[in-house]
Image 1 (tube, rainbow, N blue to C red):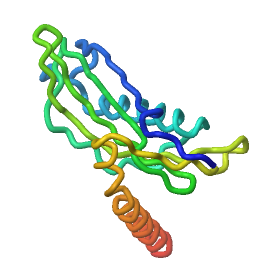
Image 2: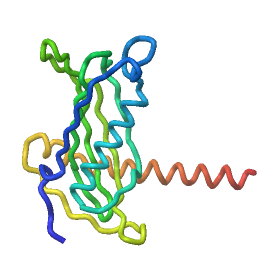
Image 3: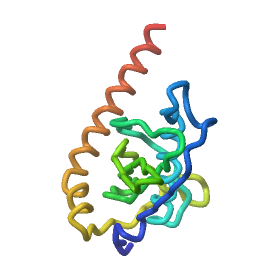
Length: 167
């Protein structure tokens, strides 16, 4: 299977934050940000593999600053690394003051997606080719993040099995 450039998966989304999207502080609900993050990351993953995908994990969503009513939420995602059937996607979330044009970083996340074949089974994905400095930055530490996820998942399975045996 041929590899694909990371730029081919790069996806952008912008939306206006309105009062129904916000909490009593006038800032967007964290769950709404997480829904945007999952949606854009899945689009980037599907663009990379041209297959249906499912979310396998979210390493973290780090909230660094709020997005307020009347601001735009600007989200960017791209595939940073691939394994056999999985893809790591980096997502960056910014707030934009639409009057001043000022943008600020509000959240970042890494998510993992698994590509599915016609029968809903995991299927091979193309390798990713980083090109820009930003893409290389995320790519060079991706194997380490992958190993951490494997270890975390194994530990969780062991705890679940132990809990099942205790009951």
